[in-house]
View 1 (cartoon, chains in turn cyan, red):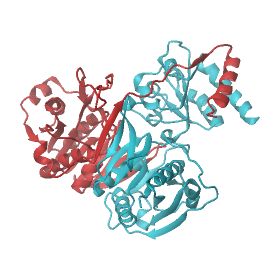
View 2 (spheres, rainbow over the protein chains, first blue to last red):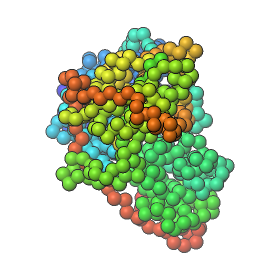
View 3 (cartoon, one colour):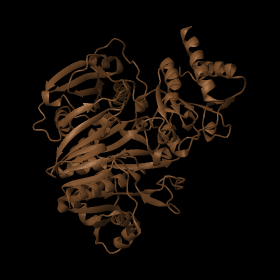
View 4 (cartoon, rainbow over the protein chains, first blue to last red):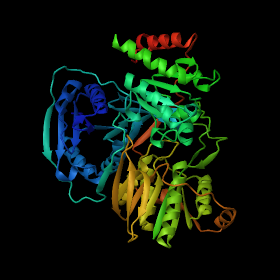
Length: 324
Length: 258
């Protein structure tokens, strides 16, 4: 039986979009292996865990223990390793989030599994996982083949579509008490950022501002557009270095790598290092006063104009169009 | 206090990547190599910690061919005390094997603290730090943006970035390994006296083949290729109100992203 185990993520009691995406993909891959997709959550059980059944997951394990309420690398590694020992999947998948990228390499090392990180595609070839991932900040791509019997990968958010494969079907949710033993490196606290919006790395729509924004207050006009279309606001390195936006809004080689369906770049020239952070966006829109801005060469749609004029018009027009 | 720093030598960020004709890798001739940018934050934090602790030793290590001695010299010029070059001749590497080798060396050194960059900008894998942690059986924290040495010099409080502007704060007992992120500090430039001194600081050369044991690569990367070419699309012409209307229509009906 060649099952695929997905390491799920949840926030505020609900399963995250990235886990629905990965469950759908795992279900598709598991079918090629003659097995089934299963999901594991550590810590609390998300209220809508059973909904993963509609996305192709047959079972959802919830590994619970008071010591697992906060993330702990070694604690989570232990209990997931124990589960893998019992359920024996051949493939284990996670999301390339700060959580997944911290946990999965440790798991892989403990289990002697090959790991491909931050993949943009997954497939099965010759009965084994074939993972596609970027190198050199996206300037090249490779396929990763596995020598190990247990194969692991983390995928970039929004690489797969969360598809309902069996509407209304509930997954079997199995809660287990899982004691991780004595923990080291215990988390003292989480300092929450002001953003309760979707993180840039998981956003399916992004509106980004460059040096042309001229002041932090001006990002308000991007936020207004973002609110209307359901996007997260980002910034170029030039904007961050000029003090117009905080570092955690930076998209680019030395900032965040994003993978949205729509990327609207306002007053961003399109330096190679910025491109490195958003080049896999499905649709790129460039708005810039300078017709020679390099980003126009990579954008699907471009408007040569003053963002301070164009962006508010765009916000108005979207409001009107979406209200129809 | 003994502090280790894992350094990687990577192609410069401006490098134009060319693929070998047999797709087995990239063309390396003419590439300018640099210290992995995230590793610079690691060296700096190691030096600052040694200074705060009032003494100790900072050891920089790097796995790779002869040219990686350059990154070790940079670390020594910044102020590290000793360097270790692990020559990788004769081995196929993946993250697993790399981590095994580095962990073997680190084990013998018995570091209190190991600083690394959060990821290398060539493969962007961000796997080796975590795997070294597992092989050494020590705790790990990645994406470190703040590090404060404890008064007992055997512990630290560390803040880690987790997205959405949020941070997780950990208190850690040594030994521990940390993956530095941008913003942790401002790396010092190597001074001219520093560069001169670096030439005579101890630099040991080890062979990776002596340190790999039974470890073999768990993954192979094949079919290297350039990304699909992104062609220029359409530049919408007309008055602002018109182009905006047209863009919204295209995004909804043609691109179907809203």
